[in-house]
Length: 230
Image (cartoon, rainbow, N blue to C red):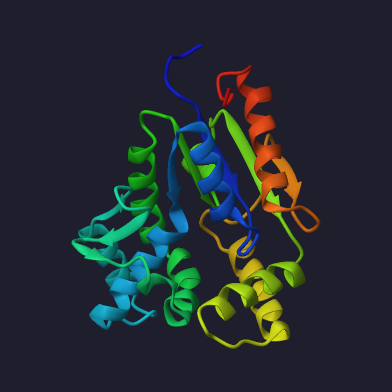
């Protein structure tokens, strides 16, 4: 068995709880956590700042190739686009709406997949997104596919927005979830799908702690104890 620490790949649709679960699992294991969605959001944020139209896929690809994206863990998990801290800026509704179509641009995906693979070279990483177990790290030692109904994901999103003082319609959010599911699953480049060897976890009736424990148990099973927190 290789001495490299394992890679834990967590995939699933928008709102399934990937970020929260991946962050907590990484903390438990002492691994690095990477939110790939934040990387696509950073590209969307920069394209907005630069005034590049969504229809200009070549222009957005050029931006993705020219920029640096890094995570600073010295003060929580901060996201930087070049030298700018965009942690809060990439969570605005405007950037959220743009991030999915930006992520469907093949040139952008290829560049960010390169970055993600570089981040995982040494292992010891928990990475979450849409195509981690299928494209970025198809040989990841642990693969999880988190799911939840559009209604439950919309409810979670509504609570998240309410905490920020943003009012929203549950029906509208559920419709947006279904639309994004369809877009992410039907795109030509790296569509959202469950890897054949990924363990599915439906989070609809589970607490965050229960999902985290399920993932940790999977780590122990797949890695024969090398991912154990004990």
